[in-house]
Length: 524
Image (cartoon, rainbow, N blue to C red; front, side):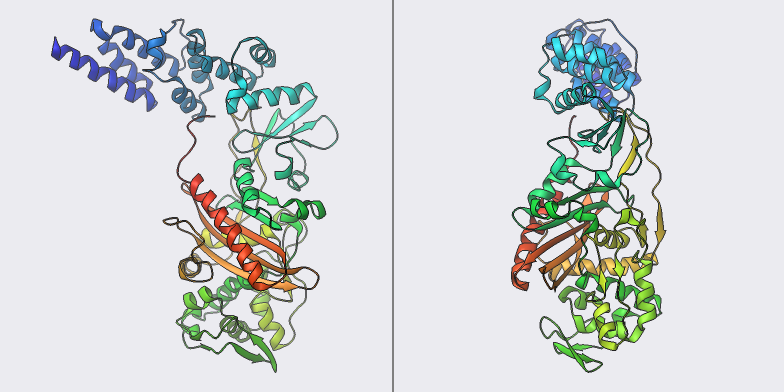
């Protein structure tokens, strides 16, 4: 008898393991085998019922309360929904609902709404006793129903299904009250919205909240972009900036400053000049003359060890030397290749500009380090980092991922990314190495959490009437996805003050990204 019990328990565990892995057929066989032994028959029967439902078959059995803990319902529901198997999810939710599990009632109502049965969803919310407000999915359902009752034609959802805005039959989109501060300027960039019950945006409200918290009491903007797809995950600004320029993440133009040194290095490699070898023969004394005019570094860097060293300490002299040697035509061409001067319709209208052609050696030196002659928006600055992260390809940024169900539980396949090659992948990898040196021991040292890999470049400048500002760009990973970022902090009175502020903001942002990258959510 003892051996029979052991075999039965082994079959039960195998069935549970296979069921949670999504293999309903093998799970059902294992549970059927376990059901031959009287002592575990109830659990085995529950397992068979849930296996049948996970396979998409409607079943009439009701599970005893003590068996629900053995075959956990929500992981099965989540796995079915994420696999796009809504029939299976509906069958699972129906079993749980009839068995007295309130979670089943919540998912059943949500799936009914997703399938277009709004009356069933309303009835469930009105009279089922399910505590909808206690779960994220329930809150989403209630808000979506309220928006539809208020006349919404199309619901705009974030990438996880959270309500961003409601689009009525006419007029412009009405942002959800909670999401409104996070999508200032975003909705106006969508263009024509297709006829659909719902549209999934690329925006991630959870990441957007984290970015806005990272800004804190400072003035500025943060943009996060998936480096491969161009999906804009966050584009937020502080309240004072947004009040003046609601779409500051797309429109606010400032000098790129030292982040432009990436383009100067790329131009050198494109011309056949090994930037690393050339810089290794340079010495930074802290100041140099170009056309008789002085250009300063933050400090004398001494003999330079190459590209990594020069980028890490952000030596102005090294990159000015490169740029002046290359000449204006090559440098301006490099900027254009990275999206500058692309016109008002490119990069969601956020393309930077070389607004004043350099005519003298000093002007060319300035352009080589991103000053005086050029401007960049926060979105475009993030895309510069995306080029390096994406093996040299510039993704066209996008805000819409495609039509979806009104709770985001189902969706069309997103369109393939639109991208073009900017630099050879080998050059991109070399620049990535140099950006890693910046984060490891240069001007970006100590900003990333321990053990969280980041590559970045810092840039600091001042402009009359605007005080000091920074552009900190880089990339890190969210799971397996490289995400490029731009942190822009503005309106600080001095260079040390803006550096302190930018360090605070960037540390908070990178910590939030590291926390988020540790694993996906368990449910909806």
